[in-house]
Length: 486
Image (cartoon, rainbow, N blue to C red; front, side):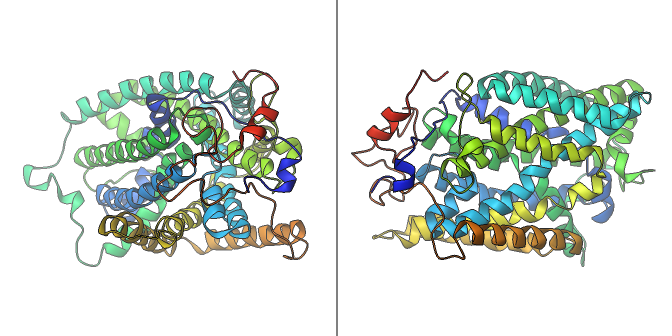
């Protein structure tokens, strides 16, 4: 049966397919923020004893495995909801809810971190204006931009990435003339010494935060043209391009400042820029960095709002206001307002307080996506080939093990916050399901409608570019079309 009775009583709101591959990749790269390499540069460089590029290579390898799993699942289910939706389809509503709940810990606090960072940097440049004023002002602008829709966001992200590309080009060009490393030391930062692998693992666990852009891409599946092709490709390109930029920037930084030795690891990025291009490049870096914080907050807010919208549309959260779209802009205003209210905490929390709340949810969700591929694409398949063993068995297993490996490197504070958050989610789930005696409300799809390869069944509409996720019946789609989608 295509939809559950509760879903059939109320037509489902549908997002609008307006994004193509370039816009999707720009969205992901803006989320990742290429200049984010300088946010944790001094901290991780100090922790890895000058082997920051090696830590980035390790983090990139782990993230590519998980990015592959996201690509496999988005081909099967081209819907908003990301890890929540994939775990729901593979393991049922309870596991899906808890996966989405874990991911929301990550996404709810990511915009707040961006507002905090932007406020800190702008306050340093303009001390007369308090950091909180900058943070709240940017929050309101981001909320307004998100209400206008992802098509508008794609134009803003293009401008941000263009400015960022200019800064990175200048850094690469100037760093090549400022290298302090001898020819024999050029690649030392990629080769850890004996006993340093544990340091690299801890560093890679911190750096994993910078790769969350590929997960954000998966939340755009209902707004992408031909999502089974463009979204998996966008996930891969975002991960590879962003990861290689991180590695390159880290390597050039090590050539300019071998061994680090920064006065303040928290501001190592600005210090490095001053070493490369003087005060002028340092000032430009501050401006572009704030611009990237703005862009990252904008797209991360858009992503988590779509996860909350997906859960509200399915009835896991209240449909009003979380499962409805703005009648004119076709954007999830209720979830956007909720995320903005959480981000107001940027006025009272410190940066350290916010950061410890993020990585737990991300790595938990990544682990579940890898397991979802094994369950949905391999376990349910009637005929298993050597290629399916590789794509849906070995690679997701390696992805799962590697994310668990990074998970064990998180701090005790991160685990404490994460476990408290998960306990709250279990309590909420118990209330929704009346003591786990009922299944959580969810959009149900006949297993024959989408197979492990993501092919739409003959009696579904939408699929690729029709304006609705595969598996929604023609009746439900017609009932929802109360006006043109823009």
